[in-house]
Structures are given as structure tokens and as C-alpha cells.
Image 1 (cartoon, rainbow, N blue to C red):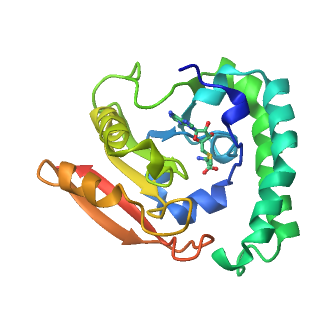
Image 2: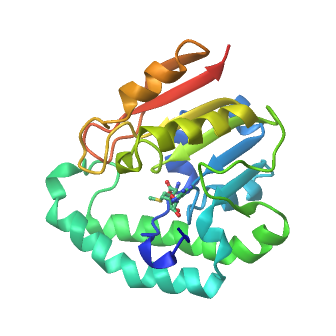
Length: 226
Ligand SMILES: C[S@@+](CC[C@H](N)C(=O)[O-])C[C@H]1O[C@@H](n2cnc3c(N)ncnc32)[C@H](O)[C@@H]1O
């Protein structure tokens, strides 16, 4: 089925959030990072400004800057309304209010939009849809990340997750996935199946992180080559 922009709810986080979500260390920052389902986050833009190396993959990178800008503007109010209707599902300590959330997300997405065309020419934003194979060779990246896509969208099913994570582990020495909850903010249905499938061939841990916006969403899954 063709990937359609009208089905995507673009919502992007920033470098400070990614740093806490994935417990990124100075050593991580110096490594070769590939971020899957990176969407309209400003992680790549901000890392590039700091001379650090990140490649972002997402199916939305097939669209133009204007199409993405339009989609962000079309969906923003609905996402904020849904968040307002479910205030109790979130922790309002770092992000203090709906207005704060809007400002932080729009800042990140505007930075992404401004960087998108240059980033495409520099091959930092690459069109790719999981679980398809990527063009990269085995273990060519140190760290693969998935923020707010895998495990969160548990309705994609265990088979989708196993195929996607297998491709991530083919090209990355280690991968980290956040959060471990589904969209209803309860433990994701696919988590146990993923651990069962990969645990004999890889080193797996669930690590606490210093980030919690979705209530209870304060852990990441780490899978490393043995
Ligand atoms: C909620 S956004 C998260 C964006 C970013 N990672 C962040 O945390 O700010 C989910 C992203 O997953 C992307 N996505 C949807 N289907 C995908 C697929 N099959 N493979 C890779 N990414 C996909 C969407 O395009 C969207 O950008």
C-alpha cells in the first residue's frame, strides 16, 4: 500500500528530548547514528549544527517541504486538542502546559522544515519505510534509534516489529527504542514478543531514562550485538 501523507500525524521532538529519551552520552554523540522514523524532529538539524553525524530515515521524506509544512499546520490543532482532552495521561513537569507543548513541538518542526532541503542534498534525510531493507552495509552504524514509532504503534503487529528490528540490527551495532508503552499509555503488546525473539542472539536490557511525558513512559529498550 502506498504511504500517504494524509495518514501521518507529524509531531517532532528536539535534541534535548532525544538526549534524555535515549540517555545519549558524549561517546554516543561522537558515534555514527541512524534515526529511524525520525520524521519532523529537529534532532538531525541540531546535531548537524554541532558537527555531529546523524542520518534520519522516514517515509515522509518523499514529500516536498511545502507538503510537509501544510500537513503539520493541518494536524497541529487536532493533536493539541486530543492532548488537552487527555491531560491526565501526561506528566506536566518539564513540559508545563499545552501552550508550552505547542511551542516546543513547533520550534522543533520549524527547525526541521528549514533544514529539510539542505539536509536532503547532504543525504541526511533519506526516504525509507520500515520494515524494508535499507541501502546500508552490515554494522555500518554504531547506534540506531527509534523515538515514538516502533513499540508505540503496537497495532503494526509483532511480525512488522521483528522484521524492522532485524534490519536495524543488521546495520547497527546497537539500537535503542522509546517508549515501551502503546498509544493508550499502557505496556505495549509487542514488547514481550520482541524480547523473546531477540534475546538468545543479542544482549537486551530495559533501561530507565530521565524523560517522562506519557505517564509511565520512562524506559527504553536497548538491543546490542553480542
Ligand atoms: C510520532 S512520529 C515521531 C517522530 C520522531 N521520531 C520524534 O520522536 O519526534 C512517527 C514517525 O514514524 C514515521 N513512520 C510511519 N510509518 C513508518 C514506517 N513504516 N517506517 C518508518 N517510519 C515510519 C512517520 O512518518 C512519523 O514521522
